[in-house]
Amino acid sequence: MGQRTWFGGIGEFTNIFDWVSPGPLTSGDFLTISHGIVRASEEVISGYHIVLAGPTDNSAPTLVLKNVVLDSDLHVQPYRIGPISNPNDAPAHARMTVAGAMVNNEFMTVGFSPMSNPAQLSGQDLPVVEPLVPPQTSWPPPPPASLNVTVRPGGVMINGGTVNVAQFSTLNIRDVRDAGMFLNNGLVTSYGTTEFDLPVSGNGVFTVRGNVEFGDSVDAGSVVYLDGGHLVLDKPMEFLGTIDHVRSGLNSTIELKGAHVTSFAVDDSKLNLLNGQQLVAELDFSEPISSPTISLSNHDGSAFVALDSYVSVS
Image (cartoon, rainbow, N blue to C red; front, side):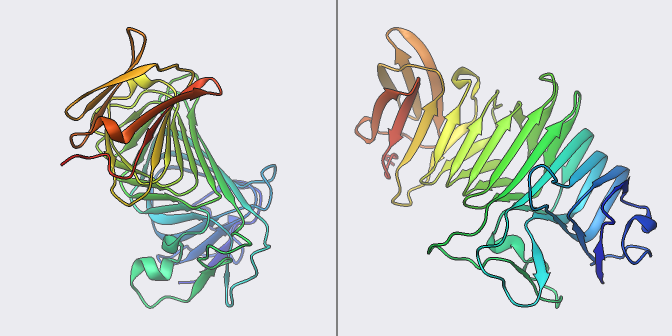
C-alpha cells in the first residue's frame, strides 16, 4: 500500500498516469484528490482509502461515477500522516456526479467522524492516518465539510454501507429534472445537516442526531431514528416511512415545511396532523405514542411537532 495523489486535472480513475508517481493502484492505497475531475465508468473501485477534499467550494474536486460500485471508503475531509493539526484548518469541500447506478458498499464520511480513520475501520495494521481535527466538543469546533451530489436523469445512488455526516458538516443529494433516486439499504447517520432533494426508497435506516430534510417522497420501508434531532418533511403526505423516537433523554422535532397544523389525533402508533378538517400528515411510529408527549406550533411558514424524550408508551 502507498500514498497516491491525483494530478489535479480531468482524467480517468484507472489511468495510472493521472496519479502522481505513476504506477498501478494497489489495494490498500491511500488516494488523495484535492483538485480536478476524476471519472470512473463501468467498474468496481475496491480496497482503497479515498480522501476527496478541496479547500474551497469553488475549487472542490469532483468524482463522476457512471455504473460504479464503490467498495472503498470515501472521506470528505483533509488527512495527513503524522501529528494532528490545529482546529483552525480550512474546511473541506467536494462534489460527486452520479450517472446510471452508483453503489456505496463501504464507509462514506463528510467531516470529522470517529469512523474517519481507515486504520480503525479496517482493523488492520495500517499506517496511522489521522484526521486534522480530533473528536472534541469544546470550542473551537472542527472545520466543516460539504459534499454535493448530483444524480443525473435516470440515475440512482444506492447506499448499501454507511454514510456519516459529522457535526457542522453538510451532505446534499439532489437529482436533475426530478428524474433520479436515492436508494438506502444501509445506514445514514446525520450529526450535521443532510438534505435529500430527490425521492428516497429502500429498507435502510436514517439516524437523525442533527438535521435531516427529505425534499421529496420517502417510500415505506425506510426507518427514521429521531435521536434528539430535527426532521424536515417537504412533502408530509408523501412520507411513508416509519419513525422511531429513540429514548435517549433528548427531545426531537418534526418540521412540516410550508404546512399549518391546528390539531392532532393519536391512533396507537399513528399520528394524524390536521389543519382544521384537512389531513396534513399521517406519520407512522414504530411503537404506540402518547398525546401528552406531543406539542404543536406554527411559525416561519411551517408547522412543528415537538416530541419529548419519552414519546413511546410501551
